[in-house]
Image 1 (cartoon, rainbow, N blue to C red):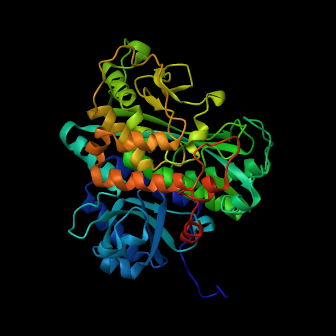
Image 2: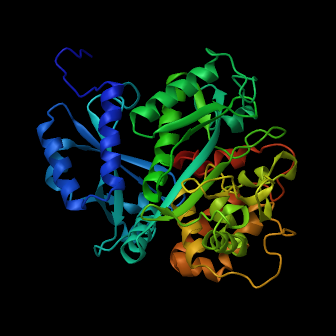
Image 3: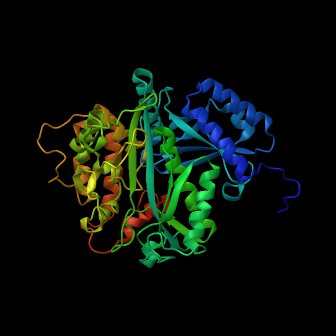
Length: 476
């Protein structure tokens, strides 16, 4: 088809970075939402080269969904964007299917045309129930409400940054074909830091880093990881909702870039037995104004009493939270102590087998690192679980809470039972969402052998929540 008469928006990477960093600054400084809305609406109205606005939202398991709205339609109907919630696994039943999307105008992104297509911008949405209230199954909305409440009441800002590991495999849709092939093919065997500059893995990492930079991620470092064909691309701290949004965008853009190159970017926690799995080490802190509440120069490991209490609450509720952090059948292969597995319910400044680590820091960077989170976890649910528990949870009276001796489950069935029986989960999510989430995980577990065994089964990949589609699910 001829493109001669088209004139759609396609900005340079430098222009994109400037626009996205400005939007990020407005978001972090909490410019009033009505001001941001009016500014974005005016931009969309004036910018004639934009054809569509992509609205993003996540389901209960964390799978990202994208809806493209014609720009002119969206400008006239953004307060009444309805969709069928019964088509989203874990959302409403068919008899009560109507949901609406609200627009979070502060979460607005300009995107590279060579990756996302010409003439489009992205914005995150919030899911609204039929009665106009926030939808309980939209964990992004739950996280945002909690973060806003803490800022309004205590001036707390919740900060997070994640180190997301993934694998790059040969061929497109390698995960969807795994049940046919029974294997993943590495595209590189260079290992940690050791990859030639123009190796396919290095080219993939470089391209992904360029896109992240253009989208305002504020990159820090990137490198191949320990396992063959494994990578990690790090970026800076952000306010917690923005940080969770960036996790979703990170996985979206890396998957698209991999697909463009003829590869598959996979976030299965342990796609290959015998090599290191992938984690999503989650670094968190809380600030009040410019003061990092986790820092105390004279504290143990220079972590404040406030920070240690936060950490102790996570350890107290470790079994309650395990299914949130490790939400798939495959995730329990990663909790293997032979590969630096963070499966010990304890804290340590040095031992990477501890589920929570206290990294070296200063008055700006002091934080705790929750290492037990897998890269396929719902980022909104995981971060909500961490902060809600760390701030409001109970602390056990048992001695030596941080010393260890307890372990996270080694299979999803045990984690499901802990989750279902948890009074704390009922408190923070409500019994309805707790039950629906547990049912989704039980359905996936039922499609895989009870014992994981020594090789990855086709079912644990095929019915993984980031891989399946309706056709695959119904083939079982």
